[in-house]
Length: 66
Image (cartoon, rainbow, N blue to C red):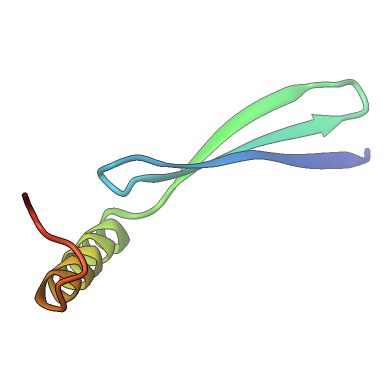
């Protein structure tokens, strides 16, 4: 059985949830849609990193709240 893997999209939302949607297609054209999400611990570390970067940019005057 040959198997073709198609990656459709990597979707980020504002909560930094990462979803990877994959369709697996075999010779009988069976479609399986899967969602692979990051583990919560990784999301939390990403949130901390993004906050740190934002604070650094604000300190350097690159962005700010009007």
